[in-house]
Image 1 (spheres, protein in one colour):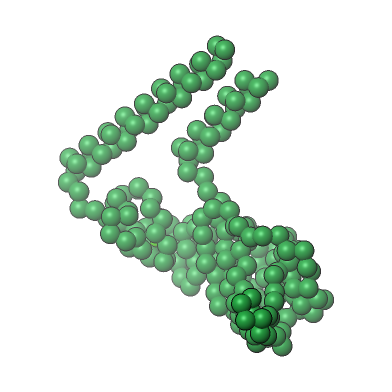
Image 2: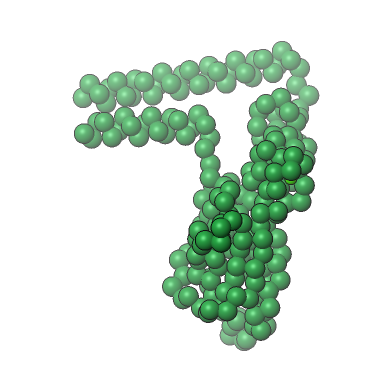
Length: 211
Ligand SMILES: [Ca+2]
Ligand SMILES: [Ca+2]
């Protein structure tokens, strides 16, 4: 049983390694005022899992809704208008709310108690599926409109022969002016590295199964 688990874990790890699977999350930024006015500052897409501490107080909440208006995620927000150091009351605070990206998320709402103090349709901002890469759409959120190599403020680092103009010098191998011979040499080294990795993994698994 333990062996089967080990083999399965190794295979899943290998699959994740080969595909480079990463979740996408979005950070929504706001400025919240004491009088409950809210300024929306924008959205930022990132790769990975959102990290935020659980908050027990339900005084302020974010609701994410789908196209049908059903709540797909609720989050309690940490809100305090008292400065941590000076202990003085402050009039406004920045709020950054991370959430896992799902294609069905359409609306973000901010509540103070039962009162809706802010609402915004995110559908247009995240991906409007119109064939043009515009606004805050990018490769992470909207691959249909912003394929790899699009100018979308996101360096996708995909080795696919398309130079991404958003990548800094040396980040996207497709942007470097490497000679075809050197490029072929790099590809061969990468292939050899992959084969060696698989052989080592095979030996480890074989030894584990034999034990
Ligand atoms: Ca679009
Ligand atoms: Ca890009």
